[in-house]
Length: 341
Image 1 (cartoon, rainbow, N blue to C red):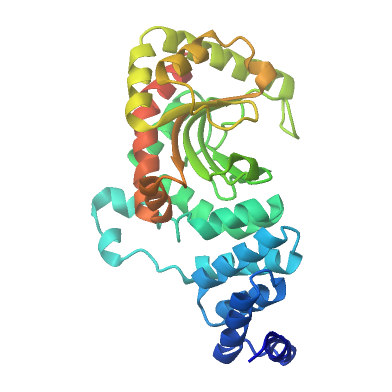
Image 2 (image 1 turned 90 degrees about the vertical axis):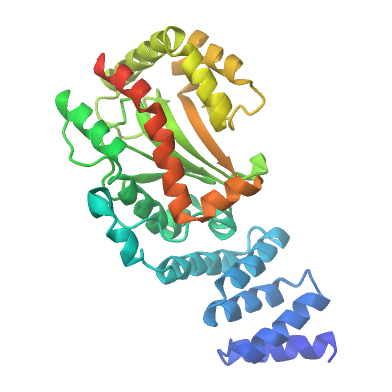
């Protein structure tokens, strides 16, 4: 069948609302013959969604958005595909739910992890739409983190300092940080050294990433309460952090970053992957422009273009273990800085 006939048949299927197997075959052949045909790829994605072939749908939608990043139909379909993928993810097996006292306290793990489709949605969708689509996966991860021992230690430390809160993360405690960026920090932590998670799929970076570590948000931005006093408070925390790192923590943090894929990040820049751990730690100690930079972070990173990292991001249990290990390692440093306040 020639291209014109295939196009005619594909459009007729769409007009009838038929996105079944035959329509899929027609659009798949049309996309193969004319790889730049946005309509064919979009209809193919719709067929795959209706047939429950969500991975195939996501691949087709990525192709559309590579051709035309402003294709709103493709963006909408990608959002719907992610929603369905989250809903279809299997629940935590009963055997895992019964693994002793710690497991009983844990919420279900994140559903679906963060793979190619999730990061494509984060990059292609507007921040509010990405937040809506990926929110259930982020929140499930945060709720699972709440059941880990390090989380209880953070909550207890804050409670002893007179700060309220019974959980590390509350529901709806994740935010859109702009194009290609979602983040979350512990309850009550806006003006504190943050137990911080970030998810990135920024077009200019050329790679997607997840971070976990200690962050300092020194900007007096948004609708935060007590902005002036809060900025002074977090600046004081950062100075204490510098003092401790320059003394007893300097070799420990350097070795930890070397062994665990640790990098710093500051301002609105990507992680400083070209900076050796010793130089990164020295930068943290000598930095005198933290308020001007607005954001300073140290922690571990996972990158989508590294095979083992990608496997960790995609697997909910592995991702949870990676987050837990990161914060467990950094907890003594965080606690030292926090308790001095």
